Image 1 (cartoon, rainbow, N blue to C red):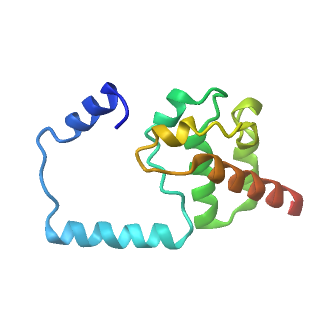
Image 2: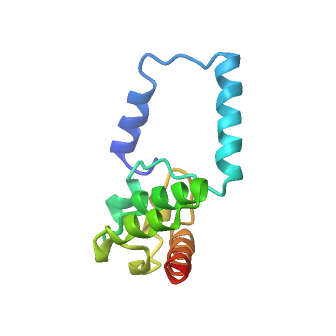
Length: 128
């Protein structure tokens, strides 16, 4: 957490908290393994990065598109959906300020991941 709002949201999360059953925990671990094996970016789309991005890059949307592509390899859909983003919201607009990473509860190196997605998008579009 890096501000009071995040603290409040985390406290709200644990209102009426119930622990996972052993079976639920087992299922959650298996799902995490599957997602990680596909090369997914562990973004939870909390949008805390968006609060501080001076360029207004749509980081959660970009990472979501990347994750969907990693799971289905449908290049046409990846390119079409990526190109539907506003031009100033795309990965290549990142200025490497790292404010997003400092605000990311997952500890992601967001600028590096945006470069990775930008390179993939260019590669996929080139292959057509």
